[in-house]
Length: 366
Image (cartoon, rainbow, N blue to C red):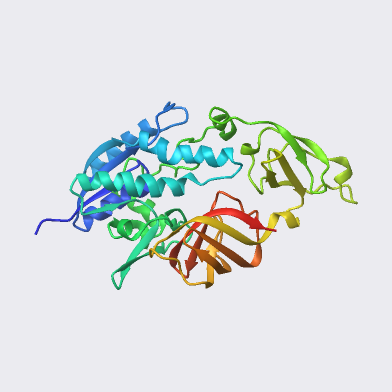
């Protein structure tokens, strides 16, 4: 019987490299695919795709798998980057990794892999897939500190049925140890951070090139103007650094100390940025949220009731109730008010280990 063919996305990072080796050990015929998703200003200073391709090809050589590079820059620009800019222009804070997984890694990549005769695709994400009664479930990784199911919540049954996540069962420490043991050239390579197409470059400088923006008033909760913002797109709710207000004298505490200021609201209609003082200011706490663009892994929304949710990636699950939902929209009520719930980010729902899906936060109730 011929081996099943798996096409794995190899980024040049240690996770996808070890995942490729694991698949080969499990008896699959493995083909590596390196995706180039950005080329507007692909210089070595910020965009490391040339280095990453060399790393991926070197690993493929050591592991003993074929690898090819494929350019998805046009698809990425149309499907991910254009949406990213639209959201920022509207004053929201999008998560391009969620969109990239839904539109590129599990759509354009999956289509390309099928043309290569793949039975299955694989990535180096930390997550798990389980088949139960003919349905496919997305589960959290066993290593909860690395779990990436949050970024994968828009996957559907057709995509999950063809996907393997080899790293879902093992901790990151073991991945590093395997890479060292195999002598992989990227065993000590740092994990990539930040948004893929921005790399390590200054974020504001990058957005400057693509967005039109208008400075406007910066006000406190009581409506007092205390400064000027440089453009609403450049701020995110809960932001503390880089607001540029410093110590406003009349807002000092009785002992002369000064609570930190936070971005709390954006009024796009009047181009006003509202800031508040103190981490626990009521404007930063939301007992409810409304989301749209809902996507459910099972193909239909879960029943209303008790679940848990994340409103940002690096957050512990929080208890909530799923209230009204109609196809594309749903609302959540939290047991405890949540801090800096940010429109444009994803609200992702869980039933224990099972990721049910989620949507894009449209508004948060104060």
